[in-house]
Length: 117
Length: 113
Image (cartoon, rainbow over all chains, first blue to last red; front, side, top):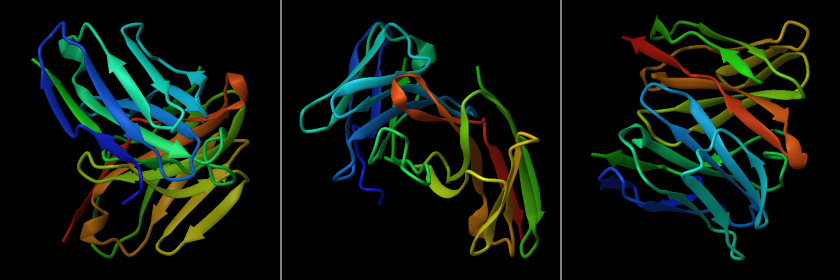
């Protein structure tokens, strides 16, 4: 158990809909990262928040948005969903903004599996 | 941009030694990490190299050559439970003062009895 909690674990929805994925980082971690993993694909970096502020942005679509709240949990909002958005969405956390201090270690949650029909 | 190359699949037998290579192209390189992922579960951190050379952690070792933009993960005394996907990840400087890990597409390791 990494200490990172993601909900929901599974989500099935229709095209055009909007969903929200939730992530609670490890206790004490200030950074939250969102990654997307499609079938047989690597982990695509979407966005990072550090202590409530957006710190880095990757290949995140304009239909997607995220935020980190004062209690450090984060939400990823996916709107106008398309079939191609079906994927595993992982949240990861680290202590600092530098992706895990000396070792670069990220702690991943179990992911939210989104299926768009 | 950044790019990483690693083999899509490697097969080996129990007890053997296997090496998974990773080559990368990036600016602002800071270090190379390796993660293990079982069947779509949570990726878990295995090792990290910031400097050239070999880092050993039990049955797993990781190597980095910064001049060659190359690294590898070495798994010894393979066990069936080592069957998983292995990702190399480049940690590179991003805007805003962060160091964001960029992951390769992963190598599926299949261990046979």
